[in-house]
Length: 472
Image (tube, rainbow, N blue to C red; front, side, top):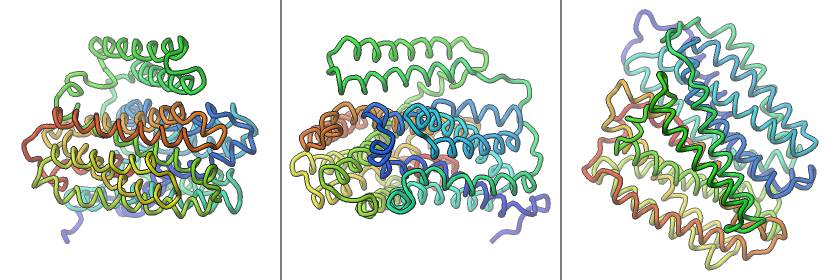
């Protein structure tokens, strides 16, 4: 093991532990809420649309403002943004846990997403700046492992808390942890200077991407009630698409754009973004559909549901590990197409034979394929990106990671609307069938889009790439 540089911060490992704990909470809040949703519906009188927004509001705001948060860390210094983001996230968790209705719950989730979008990229910036050489690789490996653990543990912790203290503690547990971490970080974090004090925040770009995605999500939610061909659905989805067009025009003429259009349009980055977008959408669809089926139609309690989700979480991580070993030899295209076909086969299982055992077993198989896609996305997007663009490309991936999660919940909510309201099984079968078709079509697109030549192994790509993408 190489010795630390003489200028290394003496408490860098303690700082990493605290920042890792904060990041753990952010990732945890994507999956931990899934188990609590049926109980929130019963206690707060939430409708299907409100339940969908409880999931999507957090991931949408988190993803839509992620690049803005990273830019703020560059302009104002990561220390300020880390502390501010953690304060906002902790306060928002308190509000959400004390919610008495849909408006308070969704508002709290939006505020949680704002805090997460500030905290996550700024915390990663601190880690990168506190460590050098081999120590930086070790630190980033620990960071990635904490993120992956948050996604997996979230389903079990959600079941434990919901069945014990109640659904509100899914959010309230963040409060004491957040307060302690804030107090210690204020004393521990060094006053790291800003990277760039001459640039500007592209607030307009961030608002355009968040608003456009929100309109599309609302359109998908409305489709469950009014039909996929209704005028309201068409207007909302169409307005969202127009918003994306306005965003594209804005990014081309803005002096300090939120996303560099030239970088997004490069084939490797576009391919990795597409794969991650689909993978995350399908993964969130699995948790969203599963929690309502297992606790509604199948009649299981929250703790049992959390335990039943563990094979899915373990299979996801196992798929990522296998893909990490194979992608360097076979290339991102082969592993990506295979992962999507495995995912399609897994989603087809409950569409054909819906039951507790068959659903958990089949979805676990599909989750292994999805786990492989998180690695494929990182390698495809970052293996051919110049080092000076790796951080921006990673931020783009993370943004679409969260937006994919938002749309995945919205689409499945629209397809399975009847079953989510009445507890019947037909809607769940249709939703799993749609997920299988999406995976199969995505496999065809991936075969055409992802570069065919063998990519470098994930260990030789920029290490920051795996921080978020492999974690969920």
